[in-house]
Amino acid sequence: MKVLKFGGTSVGSIENIKRVKEIIVDGGEKIVVLSAMSGTTNALVEISELIKRSAIIEALGKVEVLQHKYVEVSNDLFETNSLKQDVENYCSQIFNFLKECTSENHTELLYNKIVSRGELLSTFIFTKYLNQEGINARLLPALEFMRIDKTNEPDDFYIKQNLQRLIENTPPADIYITQGFICLNAFGQIANLERGGSDYTATIIGAITKAEEVQIWTDIDGMHNNDPRFVENTHAISNLSFDEAAELAYFGAKILHPQTVMPAREANISVRLKNTLDPESYGTLISKGFKGEGIKAIAAKDSITAIKIKSARMLQAHGFLKKVFEIFEKYETSIDMITTSEIAVSLTIDDDKNLVSIVEELEKFSTVEVDNQQSIICLVGHLVVRHHETHRLFKVLQDIPVRMISYGGSNNNISLLVNTKDKITALQRLNSYIFDFEIV
Ligand code: ASP
Ligand code: MG
Image 1 (spheres, rainbow, N blue to C red):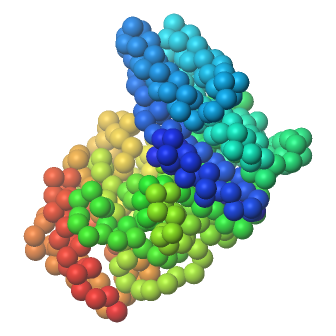
Image 2: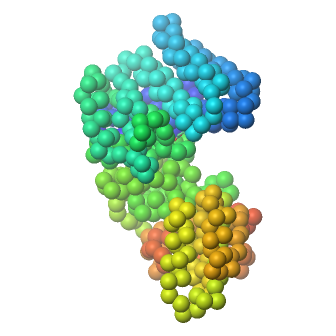
Image 3: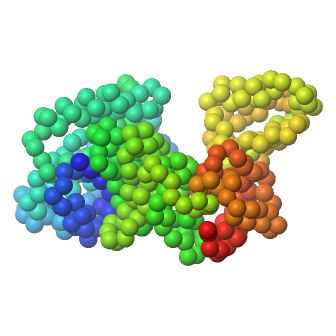
């Protein structure tokens, strides 16, 4: 059995929905995880924002616009009036629900309810479409089996039990369809796996069902060796290890939700990244083994805050770092990069929600400097630290002020911290220093 996930673009137009059908009807058993149609989740987030600002008329207007789009999809995709009616009835229920939401108080739960509707729509429509095409496809509602625990981790035991039960109680099908992204929380309320979380849904299901493979279908031909938005002539990387892919996903490669690799790595299930618009291209295979050495890819993550903590008493003092780390732990803020000297430590965080309190506590025993708008540039590959070509990256230092370097923390990663205004130049320079040479 395979798990295939299709992203927003893949189900975002009639043409692409038809392509997805062609891709999945190869006779093999599969669970298909779908995102919302492209643009829908963003629209739902905006509707929720408008409700929060009490801009009810605008919120209702946005619901109308979105509803209109779905009426068109239904008209174009379905051939019989009875199918059209079925789909329109379902869509009406969803849009009436959204209209009712505009008169409620805004809460996190209301936001979660609103954003969950995108995947409910796409999976209902797609299942009906497959049925119209004579395919024995059935819907497995994610809210009947997908759940996270109090620490926001997937509740594997619950998911396994309930998914199994659901499949047993559903008439046999060749293709099962389910919603990505949405789930229940530990209290049984609607929640989600955060933006882009459908990828994560796919590997959670893949790991639990011990799938042969998980495939993530998007609109790009795999994970690229640099950010194609800023650098020309990037190319897809054919093979990545779980560790390499996890570093890239965490440090900015937009193609994968950062947590996606974890369940696959734990269960040792390969993840293949494929392009719906070009199914023949190889894509990227993420699996256990390493292939090749040296720097394979570069990614960047923005909105990073750097904090320099300086203390005269750090000189030959023990326990200083412990005190520092305890403060970050208290405020549940994770640290990404860290470098130290004898009298100061610099570290980075990406969640600055509790920055003010953290700085206040640190200032009780040190001098603190904060720099916002930093970017982490992450260089990923196998044995990057020891590889004889790696020194080329240091050429970037002659052109760009680098605020921090993290080298040697792992064999797969070297990270540089630069001011965000220098990020694009840094990515371009690194690209030419590193990839314009043949890597041996
Ligand atoms: N539809 C959700 C989003 O746009 C989840 C996903 O696409 O993975 O974030
Ligand atoms: Mg995505």
